[in-house]
Length: 188
Image (cartoon, rainbow, N blue to C red; front, side):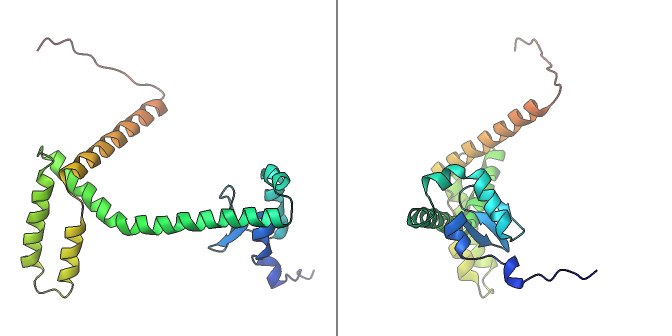
């Protein structure tokens, strides 16, 4: 039995799907702009089925034509704006994670929040001496200077970490089929 010949263009993302079904191509898959679902099989019938079954209200609100094209362009611009913001957050992510690590060290050792500035000054002094022979010394020092460790920042990071711990504990307790409490009657 002969194998069915597949047309290469039949299995690739078609640009008109963006305006017709509110889909874009991302990493070799079709991604819905409305619900962010991913369809890995790049076939028109799969994209159309998703749009018709899940987004019938969108289809009726914006019939095929200029109104749907405009709505899809608006959705696309929102996605692109959020991706741009994500890139900014990713760049700041290294500084934030370092700030959380510094805040955690301060809190674990029972130090006041104001020690964040002292720790930053300490790291800058050590970095000047330790990385003196490295070609990227200025970049390292700049990153330490840009790391937020003010008393207010350490305070805010501590609250975020405490809330995350509480949220995790509540989730674990709710997921447990059983749990027990041990109570101690003490007067001290």
